Image (cartoon, rainbow, N blue to C red; front, side, top):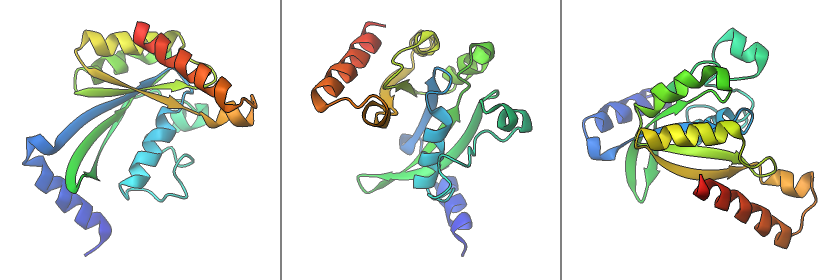
Length: 178
């Protein structure tokens, strides 16, 4: 039996068990890494190869999205991840980060239980970060902060561990205040 067929069978089986289903949205300001994170989660689930994760941009399937290098339409996918010896069906929506496509974020927040809010470690919270966080809270969606691109602090800004702690602490404080 092919790996793809096994994955489909696992998804179908888990669909019958609501306590093992999680619906999540990936939200953030434009270019903070939503689609790259989505690629990596898909690679972890065995849907795409680990070598292509971050490059394939699996969720940006539209030709215009690929040409412009941005997510225009929210895209959804189902995958299975194991946690603590138990399989979970993860229904994930990768949302656009550009303010012009905010309607897709609002609709996505109405379909999910939780949202992963990505914040670029160097850029910090941006206007769209605040917008998507407020949308999540308005729709009673539980947000989880994911500080992304931490490697930029080391590679680009050359910060030491003390400065890194201070910068990450400021990001966490700002998101908590929002």
